[in-house]
Image 1 (cartoon, rainbow, N blue to C red):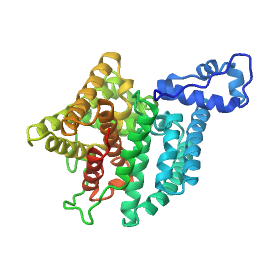
Image 2: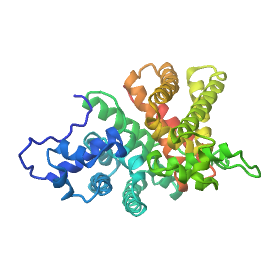
Image 3: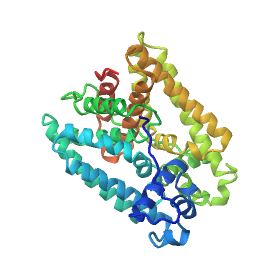
Image 4: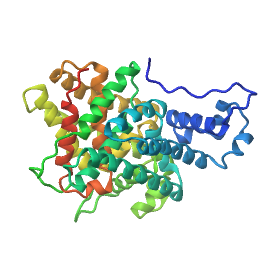
Length: 397
C-alpha cells in the first residue's frame, strides 16, 4: 500500500452528506500541492464539483477557507492526544493521522503565514493548546527531565510528527508506520545530559557596530519578511520600508523581488555546502563525518534562522531556471547526508535513510526558529543530542 493522500471526490450533481468537510479536505490538498496564492476559490469549487457561488455560501473568503483547513487539522490532532492514554498509544494513533492529513504540516508551517494577523493569532493559540496536551504525555513518559527540557522535547516531537506529513515517499503502509514509530520513540527517549558540556549563546543575523551596504540591508530585511509572511505576501514597498527607503528605491539595487529571493537562497545554499565541504575534510569514518556535518548544519541554522526559514519554504517561488538550480543544490546536500548515513548504517534502505535525514532537518530547522528555544544558551548542544539519537536509532529497517 502506497503512502498517499487521496482527494475526496464526489460525483457532479450529487450533494455529499458533508459538503463543508469535503471542501475543507479538498482545499487542504490544493493549498498543500500548489500553494495558497496559486489556488483560487474557483479551483476549489471545480475540484469539489460545485459552483464558486455555492462555495462562498460556506466560506466568505479564501483566507477563511485556509484558516478552517488548518483549524480542522489541529482539532484532529487535539482529539488524538486527548484520547491517548500514554506515549505508546499517542504515537500509534498519530500514525493514522499522518496518513490521512498529510497536508497539515505544510499548511501551518508555510501557507498560514499568508493569513491576516488576527487569524494567525487564532492558529497560534490552537497550536499552543495542542503543545500543552502533548507536553503532558511527554512529561508522563520522561519524569526524569526538568520543565525546560520537557518543553524542548515536546516541541521537537511536534516537529518530528509534522515531518511525516511532508515526506514524498512511497512505502507499504505497515513499513512506513513502523519506521515512523521507531524513530519517534527514539527521539522521545533520547538521553539528555544533566549539564551540556559546551554552553554557548546562539547567534543570529545581527551586525553590531557595522552599517551594512544598502544592498545587504535589503537582502537582510527581505529575508526576514519572506520568512515571517511568505514571499507572495511581501511587496517591494514593504522591503524598502524595513530598510528605511521607498519601494521605488529598491529597484535601484534589485530589478525584481524574485532576484532578492534568489540572491538570498543562493547564499544560503553556498554557505551550507561550504560547511559541508569543511566537515568532509575532517574525520575518518562515515559516522565521524556525519557527526561533523550535523554540527556544521546546526551551527549554520542557529546563526541564520531566517535564512533557514526561506530555504525550507520559498524555493518554489523562484523562476524556473533558478528554482531547478536551487532544488538540485538542496538534493545534492541531502544526498551527501544519506550516503554517509547508509555507509555508517548499511542496514538502512534508501527510503528509510531519507526519512531519518528529513526528520533530522525538520527538528533542527523548526527549533532554531522558535523564540522560546532560541533563548536557551544550550540549544546547540541539545540539538546535537536530539538529532544524534535519530541518526543512531536502533530500528531494524
